Length: 93
Image 1 (cartoon, rainbow, N blue to C red):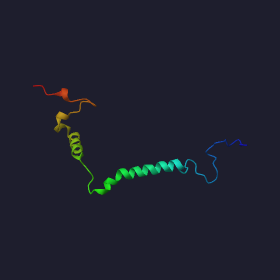
Image 2 (image 1 turned 135 degrees about the vertical axis):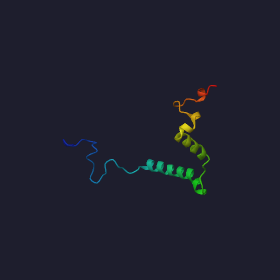
Image 3 (image 1 turned 180 degrees about the horizontal axis):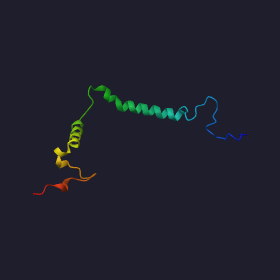
Image 4 (image 1 turned 90 degrees about the vertical axis):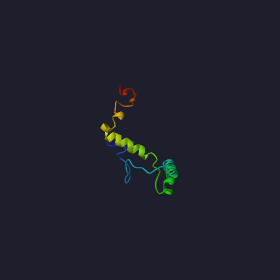
């Protein structure tokens, strides 16, 4: 019978030596962790086969950073709002 200071299912009153909030992985948790590890290794192993990983999009990223850092040098890429086109801002002659 529970006493006045304890309630059934009260996590703060655990068995001696038990760690509250930390429990070992059950079988399903270990299985999920193992599958995730195997998938990670399968996806990452090609990176170990080359001296230099593929950087095909690096020039595009560097160009975008250059335009963002120097907006006055690139007025044709002026910011006019999020996800709006610059095509209506053609220079009138």
